[in-house]
Length: 115
Image 1: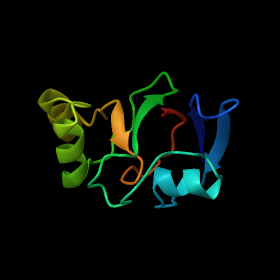
Image 2: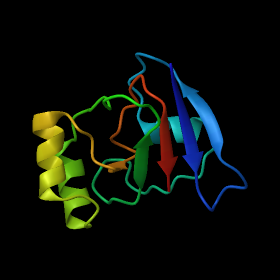
Image 3: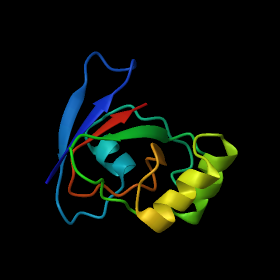
């Protein structure tokens, strides 16, 4: 089980929710389930409106998860991630700081999501 803490000026205070291990729902689906006001439009990884900054809250190697091709393109074009960060994600399994909430599947690690 993972603790996912959402933090935003849109919210009165940070909110931590639990993501069930083995669930393949996206971070955006988790936010919607708990009525957390993460921006989104297309829910398909094409518009970039759901870009969030994700910090790992553990003192261990982060659990990388593949970036979708849409995510790579949208985040790179918007200047949120670099070519080097994409290479680190693909080769070294180091996740970039910015992700699309509609594409990210929460792993078994505690994270802080800023939006």
